[in-house]
Length: 208
Image 1 (cartoon, one colour):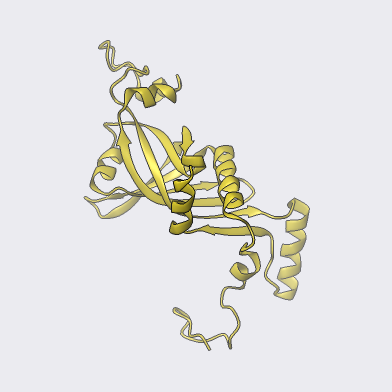
Image 2: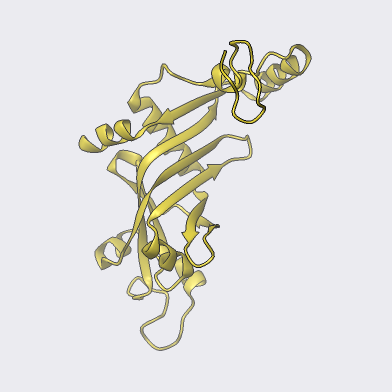
C-alpha cells in the first residue's frame, strides 16, 4: 500500500491521482508529441513567461508573444527590450518556464533555460512593426522601435522538459464525460496528457 505524501493515508493500492491515470497518453510517438505541442503553442501565440527575481527570491510572470520556434519546434523565441527587468532576471538565473492556455482548458508547460541574443540578423529576421508600440520612439534617431533599435533583443528558450494536455474529445463529448464522472466518481477521460522528458528532448534536438 502506497502512503500518500499530504493526506497521510493510503488508497489500498488504487491510484491516488485517477485523473492522471485515465488521461496519460503513453502511446503517442515522440514525433507526435513534439508536433502536437508545437502546433498548440503556435495557435495560442500568447503565453506566460516565468522567471526568478533574485532580489526578492520570488517567481515573476508576464504575458509574452511567441515570435518563432527553432530546433523542430522545441526551442522558443521571444522579442524583448534588453533593458527590461526580465532580461536582468534571466542574466542572474537562466531557468525559465513558458506556459500556454486556451479557452478550452488545453494547456502546455515548457521548462528550460534562456539566453538573451542581440544578433541583429536574428532580430531583423523576426522583427514585427508592432514592436514599436511597446518600445516607443525616443526621438534620438537610434532608439526608435525599428528593427535597428539596439534595445530589441531575442529571448531564446531551449526546452528541457514539457508537459501538456490537449483534448481528445469535442465539447459535447467532454461535457458528457464530466457529467458521468460527477455521478459515478469515474475520472473523466477527456484529455491527452503528455510528458516529454529531458532524454526525449535531447533525442529530438540531435536530429533537428
